[in-house]
Image (cartoon, rainbow, N blue to C red; front, side, top):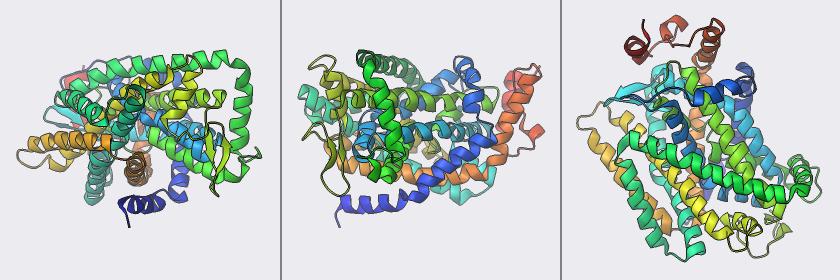
Length: 485
């Protein structure tokens, strides 16, 4: 069996309907338990986003948000959305929205838990699933398994998806060889990651809002110029999502599968990567960064992914594959699914502009995602080696390894890159969602405590022992250092 065949076989197991339902049900479960903070506390999310300062140990709330959003806003927002439409039809967009709305509940829990159980290693905050699995559940082997999975996924599998999308788009738009564009990306990425967490946070803070803002503005211009098509597109999305639309009714299950899969790949809710960035933030209460990270899911899917979807669907620049063979819709014959859908959609605004614009957008989106992947890989290497002498050497190995895989991804096939990425995402999601469900009690307690302190007119400060939460020892130091009177 070929490597592609092996990877596809693994994907068939990992991305079975069981994981699709687990992600949806986990989102519903946490949203109900938390009384839908994604609706009730949107004002808090936006207010907290710009509050707080960085410290010697941690980044600011906004930098933590930008780091996580940098991981979320990547090639999945452009190529991934196009793939979801190509394989699942327009209805896949609705299921991307659904998993984003519900996933905000899961994103809150995992980010808050990362803050609760974070550690200070080499003077920097570190946290994430491995840390809360070990400290909250006391299951060391489970924590080690997640960290190994995260290092393999973020350091080996996932970088290729981003760098491959960059090299393909740049080659098509500007005729630059993947070997050249790959080398440029590796050089720039090396400069950032060898500068450590603070440089990663500062770079993400600069790039992410700028590029996401420009991308959404272009999408809005296309939508406004085709405003009469908006009702039709909404009707197409909703009718296709529930199997009512005759043409796409036969692929309802596929629409759900691809919408949820690409939604999770893009917004990362429940995947276990977002909480690693959340743990790096300097805040007085875990709920604060939990709410900020929940908001980043909205920005990723409801804003950036929706921008891509509406550009493609309004302009009709898409094909939909028929699982039985051929196409259910073939509006642009011969065009492969991926960034080309978005490029052609933007070309309707200014002929010849689409390829260059999407290539540049992909570069920035994918570059910030590569930065995030490195940080996630480093966080788990730090966890695995924190009790080993000279563990900083392993951080350097992680940096070199990710840069090598980034270059390798630039020159390999897109199908293999995406398939490997799906294996990594799915494996991490399985392990993390099981863990956060098992840690429901302390996760929910953080939001209850935050809201109780706010109701009493206080700026919430986290004292875990008052909530009966054990093994959150770092918070005693944090409260003593920064928040004791």
